[in-house]
Length: 400
Figure 1 (cartoon, rainbow, N blue to C red):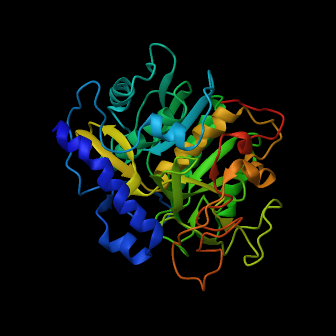
Figure 2 (cartoon, rainbow, N blue to C red):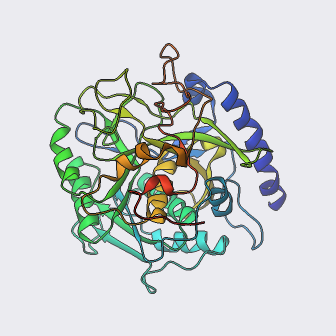
Figure 3 (cartoon, rainbow, N blue to C red):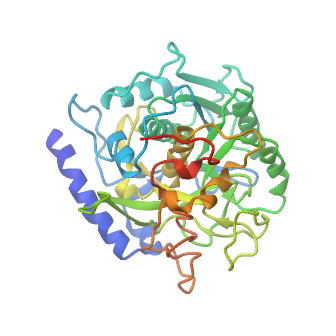
């Protein structure tokens, strides 16, 4: 088993280099070996989770101490994005639907495997609550539990010293998911990760009022995994950070890594949401997604442990991975001011990001809406964090 674990990463890197050079949405959706964990069409008024997992890799039940499971872990993520040792005492909330009954146990396995400090209910690092702030948890759902495992492990990888608050909505109706958002903020979280959404719809601005009421809170939402032209809400809201995706591969350059736009990353021009004052791209009169990005390609995905749905280690990706990574990076950067709109921070400091200039996520005549270009583009936004200076209002700086 251990020999199998050790040969997977080179193969993964080779396949991903091909993706960066020749991206293809059709290939991303039909030809590559990954699958969703949630039903993509849950019905009107409902959201679906966006996690993807590698279906070509065998499930690994246990990994011996001193060996690493397939997929990127904390060392790779922290090195690729030059992340500081910070975040002590800051809480990253993760909002999901339904209950993950093994959340705390699975988180413990992940953190122990990588030598991260324990994050438990007993030491005050981990909490799980329902959308009303109590412990009357909703029914469990295997797909959403897999999403929760990905989100918790991604936050742990980027910010090992952050606290984690898992808020479970009663179901995947927008009304209950937004009640969970409100509860996360009521519990004191200033960083809230969300890896769910649905196709944009008329009337979505009614939910925007809930988000607008929480100034000074960094909400990250996954931009989606179906490429250009598939705008999702709430990622399209002008009050959140829409997180796109890249393919991340080791390289023999000064950074040690190379990134290209992931061919599945969601991007587009919203038909409903107004353009925020900090966005100035010219080909979209309304809100453009995404704002920023991080590794999301399942072929260069994250190692995740989940015992409820998968009974072991899997490699996960999708913008479900990049959204919690960015939420944790916001926490590393510092606490926003109470009147701040954190989604505007990257636009004020583009120099603090890796500008992604290769790859595409669809066909748009070569425009920036679906093609990675110098400066802002739809699939990757401003780019990927190079440290965390671009995720602050300028008054707080975290050093490496």
